[in-house]
Image 1 (cartoon, rainbow, N blue to C red):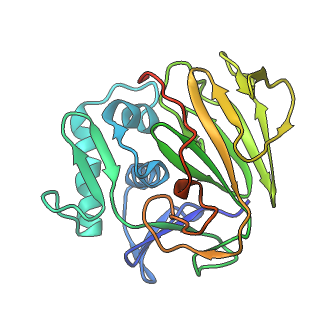
Image 2 (cartoon, helix red, strand yellow):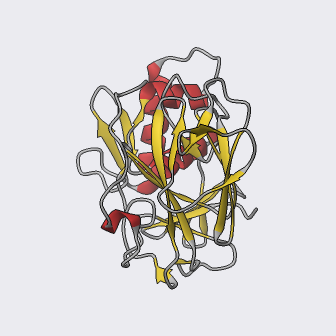
Image 3 (cartoon, helix red, strand yellow):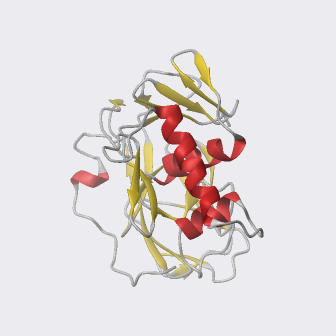
Amino acid sequence: MPARKFQFDGFTLDLGTRQLLEGSAVIHLSSKAIDLLAVLLLRRPQVASKKELHEHLWPDTFVVEGNLSGLIAELRRALRDDVHNARFIRTVHRHGYAFCGVAQEVSERSGSGVVPAFSHWITWEAGQAVLSEGQNIIGRGRHVTLWLDSPTISRRHARIVVTGSIATLEDIGSRNGSYLRGEPVQAPVRLSDGDDIRLGSILLTYRLNSGQQTTVIGENQGNLRNATDPRDQPSRVRRRSRSR
């Protein structure tokens, strides 16, 4: 699967080469700062708590809180961002950080920001995420595609595999199980638009946009604007109590 790239305001984060570029110029960042920026972009527009970021960046290691604030300062210097008038990294007082800029994900095959005719989405109470072609791992560990914040979610809980217009859901040995339409998922099963999925205690909805090719023009997860965009339709995400 091609390495993921994100573009925002003249910058490109290339997760394949692990480089931040401004135009064609490489901007030096530490490895941990690259990891932090990747998490914030993948989680946008959600807030990543300080606890989550510590677990992702320094798993099974105790570090002082100043290490995280130091990485945030490193990113802001590299991006020429202002803590008091943030363009990219927003501080949520006493909680964490969020990417607040306009960003879009681009593929190796096209840097134009044009997404395929079929685009696949997961929505839930806290936000929404675009699924990429190929394997999308859902969990709360490192190196997952979709990070869900709940103690009922395993580090590698489930995967959704996207192939063109087809998406399949599979549980990958989670502790609390994966459910589709109220039934336990025991083998890969094909998803249909509007399907309700429960992973642990988290309720999600799968959406399929099967419209014509659409240019990415918006903010947050690369917004798609056409008649079949799931965010232009009533939300089907059920209420849930807030988890860790």
